Picture (tube, rainbow, N blue to C red):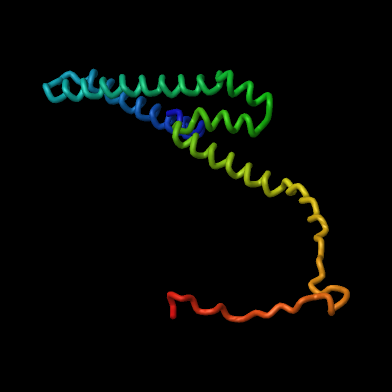
Length: 157
């Protein structure tokens, strides 16, 4: 029942009350009939058992409603913020693995959003590069460079 919403609990409670009323009427009819054969007694026993089970179910529904209304963690969260309250309600209503999975997904989404919003720190500009001229001021003082294919080695010959 913790997975059900308050509206679902109320709806189920109303249906269970209708079933209980129907069972009580049927039990009253069976008790008033004077000709109780073995079949009528079995029907009475079955109806009485169903009535008792329905009453226990209705009590469990009421206990669940009271537990939700008197939840101190939920009241504390309600005093803080709507998101905190929503988180507390989800923690109580969702199965553990489902809640953990949804919480992890939400945290990941928040981290991605924050990473996208945070500007990257500016990188310092590269220091100026030293440029060395290949040709000197005086072309007569420089040596020409000739690129030729490498000579064949003794192993290749």
